[in-house]
View (cartoon, rainbow, N blue to C red):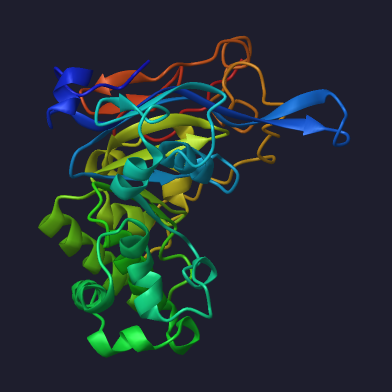
Length: 347
């Protein structure tokens, strides 16, 4: 099932109306071999049939456990790795048919480890200005001027451009990475856990900076994170992934108030309470481990750990994303009623 915006189509998207990015049945399977020249024995199903739309100017958060396919999905959207199957369109065009130079200008990425994405021998002027040089947009004094402007946008001083990455804190490095991503005035930025390595106070500064820049420039974000508190703060909608699939997607307030998938319930129950006086929630501890993406379970991929799974149904039939409301979809045979607790089905 493809989640569509009302009255959206490819021609509308190309004219600046409708979704900016449309993901249709996207799959990325990595082959498993015993050796370099051995035949393929199996596949790791990192992304296994994802349908989603990203609207212009919104932030979509993607959450889930490590290994669920969040980063792989992000790299597919960026066109950094080829799809095994499916289609991803950007502004109405298949990303595989867009000129790579144009694609790299319009889609940018900010990585989890900003220091690891920077050449330690390059100054900040060179790091932030390199995209401008490569694309022939600035050089010399004009380059210096534009880099100074970009640093000011992200809250750094122009004289920082003469320093090197090791001279900055983690939060400052992330600001430099953001300035580099903004240098080509993109339409879309993939933020791959950009705050996970930062202190809480610095996280808040970076999130507020992202929010203000998005509003000023009309940017579209995908925000990949493990932190539900962070995604609650910055995202317009949230997609919950499990074992390569999206199991629930909704507007942020709706998802946190009325989670419908048992896995979403478990994730939300694990959010730390801000104070001892806060209302306590019952912690849902899932049994077992996440199944191997090389050998996923039949039926619902979550049924091996689900507290409400029904034998003969959940382990046989794979649920599809179905609408509970116009903006809330869930892939579950027994979606938890809004505001309700998890019912336990017995045989």
